[in-house]
Image (cartoon, rainbow, N blue to C red):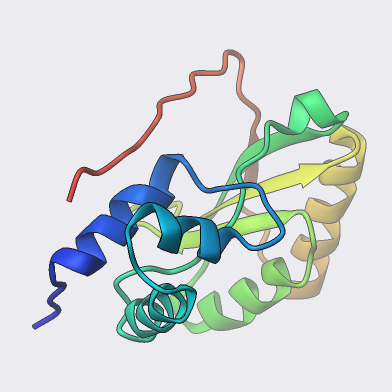
Length: 151
């Protein structure tokens, strides 16, 4: 069973929505929580190793940086899922992909400098993997919901 203690909770609550933008963010977090920088780093490494956290990183609004983004879905036969996922993950504009229990069973997000670049990349993925059922679902309206889980 995965478990966290009160110090882990304090660290996780602190980093979710207010990660310090400094040259030593873990020191800033440590000072804020009356811990050492080393304690914070060791605990976060342990939480990552246990699978309690996947990653620590920034989220950007692609459009504000001159990029476009889209959600993609693909119909991939069971025997091709791993190969398809590896092909998709090779593209630097793919932020993540995941399986869904649906006829469109692999979903992923794609960011690029233009929608034409995304369309070309999707065609290349289709040709490389022989998966023809890839749909491009660009957002028509953007909703940003802040997700903060008070632990």
